Image (cartoon, rainbow, N blue to C red; front, side, top):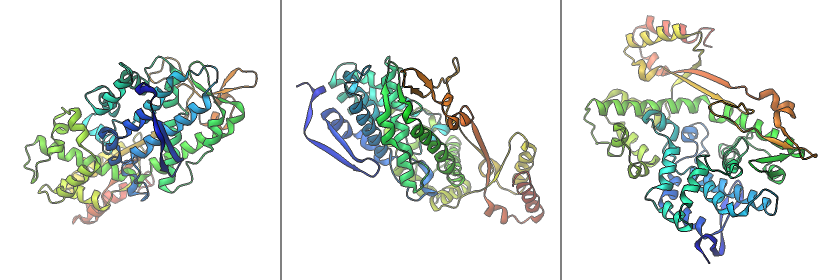
Length: 434
């Protein structure tokens, strides 16, 4: 029997709080899970700084990756013997599902913004580079690693395969909504996944939903909308992320200014220089980041020391609502007042924006064309979801954006010049910002 078709002597299972069990029978999948590159995902939290707001959110990208694999495994099982489904793609889909988040780094999105990195780029590098993962994939057959990478990058020729991993109703979203809801303890992200899996149907270039399952999909879309605004964009979580980002900016600035760190930040040097190798990227996980943040609380630089102490001990910034289209003059006044008070506004006066598009229909020619969710009607024709659902139509194509202004209230209270304090307070808590 070839490696591609080899099955384990006995099925392996992972006990999972969301799916009850994750089932593994393929030798290839079992071997991929055992690689150092995949095991590293245990040390990368799925939700970054969200555990500072929701203390249960300690789950990892390892958990999530197994969950996405399990959902795809179940979808493929349901697709067997259906028209348009080629079971030769089974292992390709399973591998892509398992490895889709392989390139995420610590506090992924914050790191990417500060150091101008792209986790999708590193996912490709891990799959195609000199790694244990690559050796296993190439053992399946020459070029198989490239196929897996192409599915994850959404460039693979068979769009049906891609849609299982990346679409507006894919295994990735179905897992993280339920998993994040479970670990944060909220009720928003729950929907009837069992029903959705039962009404999924493969056609030539995408997965569609039987029209009888429309209400389950409506529930899924609303769950996603609620999770983004109640959990992912929670202002306290964003405050922690603002501080995290400012720590990284400050450490990078100090390095570029030849500041003498008490302990040379060896794990960050390539990030600071902008020349990160794959080996160096894989060495950095959240335990290492926390180690440096802990040490930097003893640094001579007052700003780095204070920001790290805030992050490690949850002394977060306060916030007010902010409208950048109407209040930039207020922000400029605050910027100068902070400077006059001896508080560096580049680190302690931060505008943060969050935005989400819960569902969109197809707009040809746009930079990011979104393949819509289609319903399969009884007469075997397709109809785009928002044209059949009043609920989805109401939110289709509507991007919601939220802006907040973050600042350290404790530092403001410590300002000796009470006139400046009063002026800052008057601006921050005016009717426009309240």
